[in-house]
Image 1 (tube, helix red, strand yellow):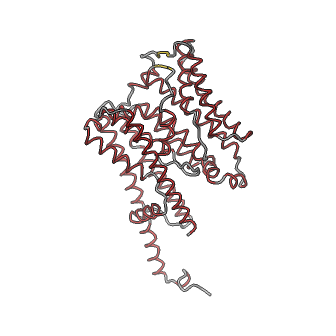
Image 2 (cartoon, one colour):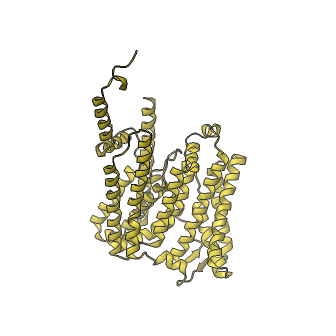
Image 3 (cartoon, rainbow, N blue to C red):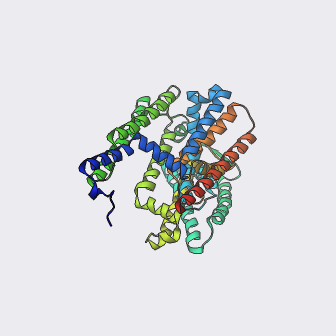
Length: 419
């Protein structure tokens, strides 16, 4: 029996009105309704961390107005880049539902390799950096081998790696325990003082909006070609303009101080590159598939072992890069590099930013937002001249809240899926 409300029984006028309702539903009001529906279903995205960052900034700026001073924010961005790059690698392994506990030690070892090869043996700086990154890749490949071939849990393998890499760091640094890097070298200047020219930072701030418009037009044209509903042109333009205004305002404010650090620019570029790889490539889709259901991914033809290998290698390589930049930031390679809270902050940043501990969900932007939250807490407490013990407690509380929110959101998604 035919449905009286089917398209065959509608008049042309009714069809036109239906099309108008569809177009209206994908407008700004439709976007808001879809966002509310996603939140209710448990898909919170980066909403909690964005709200948390606003609250943290408001509280610290009230307690000490220097917190939002341009130069203080520039210093904060310098500090974000080193651990943030390490956290990017953590995002990759967390998406698979695994963990790497040795990223702090890997960064410390990379820092030591830079100091020994470059300063002590006179190897050219580019070759020393390549050697540090290659060491990270080899360590990641070893973790993947232990996991894929021997079935060793990543928690155990990387915990053993943490101790082994720390021992290697202490061994190659020798009895002195510290190597000073030349202050006038390009690496140290990159990590401490180099900022973008104002005109270039403003020009780069236009890129996200331009990319959003270009991508939106391409997607819109593809959907219209197959007679699917698409976003109105006005919606695409409004979103791009809003993002451009926000980014340009942030760049303008930072330029009132020293400017946008090149090191933070490198971090953002890596975030964008990893986000593209995760969302627009076959490798990225395979990552989420394996993290969501490994057996289903294997049966669909995905090379699961290769995916694990790529994730662990990328994680350790990014940890080595973070260690290299940390050495540049501190102008030294020492036994303390990579120790302390570096390891935990890198993991916490990914989780606080919205990457799920249960696997299958995450974003490269998690590392960016998460590390800004952690460094904002650290910076704010330092300005208030409060004990570092409070920083550990507050960061731990924020991490616990992030995991609780993730667990509740996951439960909500499961219940909605059953419904």
